[in-house]
Amino acid sequence: QVQLVESGGGLVQAGGSLRLSCAASGTFFSINAMGWHRQAPGKQRELVARIFSGGSTYYVDSVKGRFTISRDNTKNTVFLQMNSLKPEDTAVYYCAEDIISRLGLTTYWGQGTQVTVSS
View (cartoon, rainbow, N blue to C red):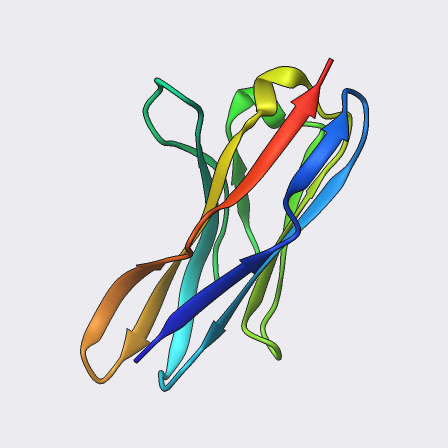
């Protein structure tokens, strides 16, 4: 059984920073891509950032230059450093990891963490 546990959300003023973490636990062979998605009230979930096993990254245009995704493979953890936060960044943030186990390649999701940016 694989589990993803997120931490680091909260309330911050516009211009502030937060750092999200997502740690995978359980029995598996390896983790391919790791990423962060977000869902604001009344909107569809969107991909925010993704980091691949080789280290290459992807960011949605709205967060480029402000957010940084990174991973610590020794701890099976992905991070999202969010700087210069804006009220429009307010959403529930979910991590997602493509994990290879005896079941094959499966995408697992975290439980979500609320990020609220006040103006």
